[in-house]
Image (cartoon, rainbow, N blue to C red):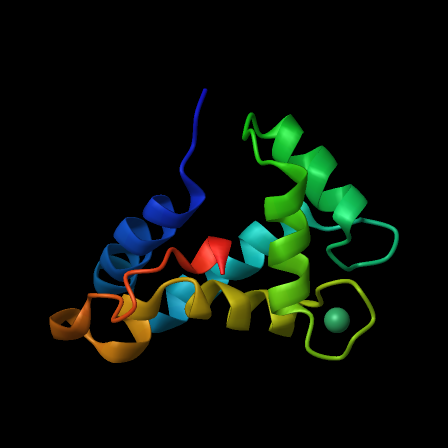
Length: 114
Ligand SMILES: [Ca+2]
């Protein structure tokens, strides 16, 4: 099964926010975090991300996982805590931050590949 991470986020999140409301959406993000985290550490690490994506049937390349961790890791510990994960998810969905009328990426660059 092929899953396009980037397209999926951009299409899915704004409509989720619209139908769920922001608070429930945050709840969904937390649920996503728990799906991907290392249960012993309570953080998303490269290993937990890779293994849980595999368990969820998502084929994500190693360099895409590394990119997600690098982009999301704000305190430099090499892993994502729940706050870092939520911020990253919002950043990967620029439509959310800029409103529905500004849904185009000005550089035309896939944010997952930058
Ligand atoms: Ca971190």
